[in-house]
Image (cartoon, rainbow, N blue to C red):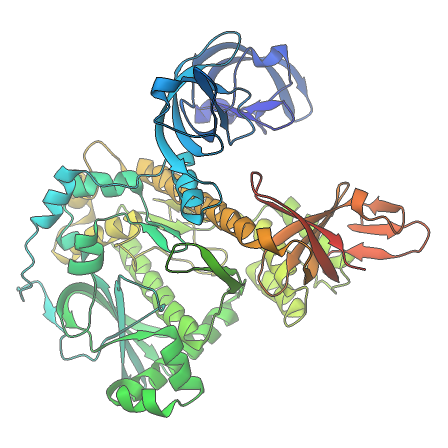
Length: 639
């Protein structure tokens, strides 16, 4: 598959894993004849013509299949025909559309078009499928990303009918433990609409008993159903500011599987005992029935635990002591994780808020408080306990793995950090070392940069049937159990757990193929679901960049505090301190001196003044330009 660069060259990414293993890197395709008429996304037959070091160079012999036939673009009307200019600059053509097939699109509007006929020479022909609207509208920008990433955003009528036909009666059966007397609460964000996890705690003579109850999605979504096929195809819910593309219809996500207060709900509960130091002593898992006491928000819990808010403390007096106990347990669980070397990343993000009209009215640094950490520790503890149980029982299931980082990337990071003046500890590479480096930057303007660079030096976490542990958490066992309403791997884990608790051996479960839609294996699911997660993450970032550019359009000329996050031959990257948006300053705009790039020390040095700009420096910048099409913010150094 051809992946094009905006400068005209490309790379051939080999589809067959065995063939790909022969090459350390994707095959380089120089611009011009070597591309053989191929464009971004095409499936091609390629011949290797040259090998230089660890990079092979190739030539496209034949375009086997056009990879991109549907395109998001900008419409330009003509007399009898119009043109659709693709938003993706890697597509080197415009689509010719006859007026009768333009759906009434007007010049400047965003459309979703289909290519019907490619030509050896000249522009392809096609038609407009949808007119999305004005690109200055935040809702239209979100729709552009949804179409561009080919995300499923509607459920079929047949599937919705299947969801509506589910039995809503909740009954206590012999395989369910009645936990309705346990004072569960849900703790979520202010805008959350689905509540798929609830927590409770009891004091023990020598420790704590933690209850983590998760919506029992597997009770409703069975293999072989339309709901299951669609959930597997989507793989995950996708979250945008003000909008979600759910993995499951609202009938499930906001109703049957939402742990609303005062309502009996089917759950899967992890019951875990810890000693006073927060070390796990025993774990049990049970299909259950719960009735949540309260729907709490992170802000409310923080106000009670940190500020002692009198009104909230009175309103939730029946669970106030439990919240305090949960806070104690979470603190000890965190201490245990940190002691074993878990990496304590705290990376703030831009929190984008939309008004009632669906337009961006506010961007600010996201908050992470005591309540977020409390829930996080409870979920991590449940995921680890479930993973250990599954491996002990030899279940064929997906673990959430995070492999050791590439030593070369770690060495490069250590060089970066040293250039910033950090006294890097010896023996780089282990989780504990990463934690020590984060501590060095904690509380400084460089903390965000160091965290991001560390993160980039690591492997991406993924799903795999082979448990190799989780490097970032320094955990020998880890899986995803706590969000089956929005992640398919969690649903798979629930099914495996239910089968084992029902007395079936791992071998029998595997033989029945009862965990996945027909025709899919667990190893294949690991690859597919990891890929779907990656697409979701990329789409979410894409929308955030789009909305950030829209928000900043009327702020050209304003000044901001920023931190230098990267240095290169082009100039410097910056990150705005208050609202966590990224931008760049071109070297050509730095007119007070002639700056030279010192690559080894990752800095710019002014030849005349000796002025230095390096990663981690605080600078004051002025927004010069917003490039909405490329989703870029261009700054200059403020005088």
